[in-house]
Image 1 (cartoon, rainbow, N blue to C red):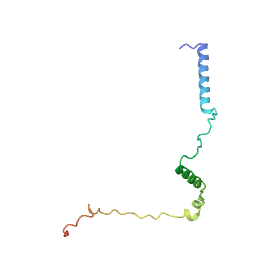
Image 2: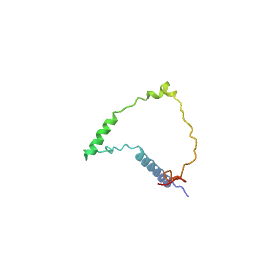
Image 3: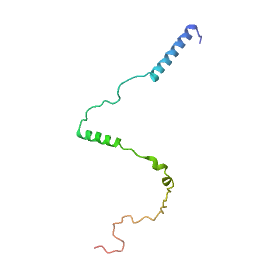
Image 4: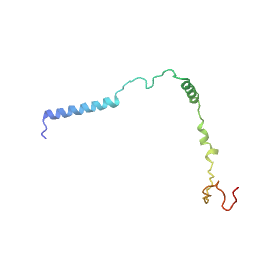
Length: 101
């Protein structure tokens, strides 16, 4: 391929255009407005749900208990479960050798 002055200028212009397009796409501040449009509740169930959400949002938890020495000194006291033999296939069936009434 023979590189001429015009080909080099064209390649540089194309590269700068590409860089400008990438910059515009990723970094340009586009103010598109609010993501959610607030409307009036459509039904009583929706209104009840929104009231519950407001009540739940005010709940906060004190997580300082997890760093308390009494909590960190707790140990797991698990019990090993020993496998047992399986029972009868139908536990409600009549016992063999028993009289059926």
